[in-house]
Image (cartoon, rainbow, N blue to C red; front, side, top):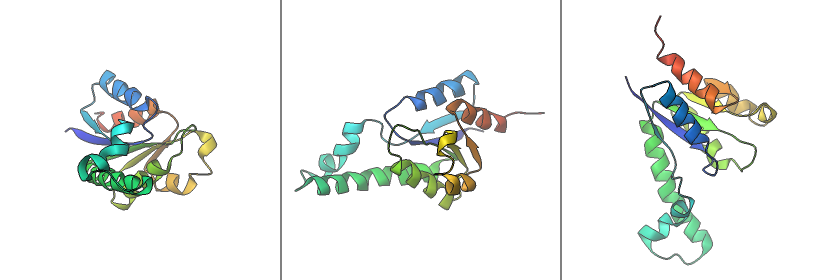
Length: 148
């Protein structure tokens, strides 16, 4: 059995690389998908498809439509969602993706530092697993494949 894991979270740090490397080290039968990590492409996709927009707001709205379309498809196809909340970046997209995963019944592993416990307590309560590091998330995922 192979699992498709959607990696929700900020696109500015290398946390996805850590997840992928840890999964590879354990030889886990998983594939990964996530949001567009090329920030410039993500910001400009609306204009690439629809043409130049009349304002920055309309440019953002157009890009959001295509980014939400991509995310919705990959979230629905995923078997598991791992959502990382870090301390450095705003996490609105992560919160939206994690909440959508819960809403559509996808198993959710939430990664968040202890200091964000209070801010994320309701979402943490809805996740199947809450951990503090990407390595712990992969340990949890690895447990699925263990045999007696």
